[in-house]
Image 1 (cartoon, one colour):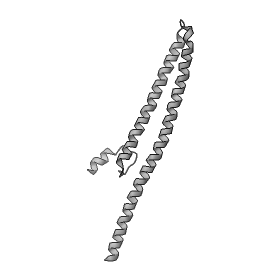
Image 2 (cartoon, helix red, strand yellow):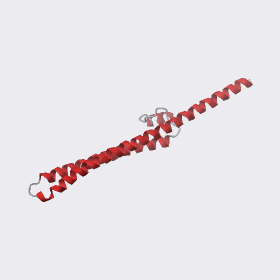
Image 3 (cartoon, one colour):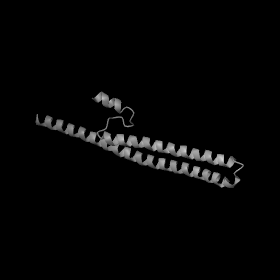
Image 4 (tube, rainbow, N blue to C red):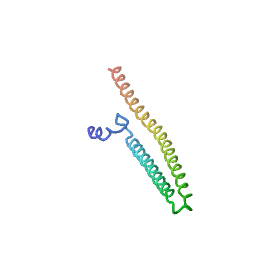
Amino acid sequence: MKNEAKKLFRFLRTKPVPANTNEILALERTKLANERTLLSYIRSSLYLLLGGIGILQLKDFARIQWLGYVALVVCVLFLAVGIFRYVLLSRRLYKWNRILFVDTISEKVQKQVDTQEKLLKEEAEA
């Protein structure tokens, strides 16, 4: 069972297999979803960029050139919003990851301290 757990958690950023694996895996899924969302913002902004440039290139439809400029402005806004949201959520996830990992370490340290205290008591009694 331990070998299977090691194989499962080899790509995690936390090396000792934590006691709260559900929370750690949920954070990893959220990080991946955050990356996918950023990529979709980039894809949408590129589509708007191409559409805006395409509309500006049309010489027969000079009356709708304003639509091309609007698409270019919205393209920049999409990209800025996507990057802003990505950075904001990445910072939050980093804090949560530190909290969960520190809690895991403190639990392990507490277990080791308890084990050492038991051994000392047993030696004192003997």
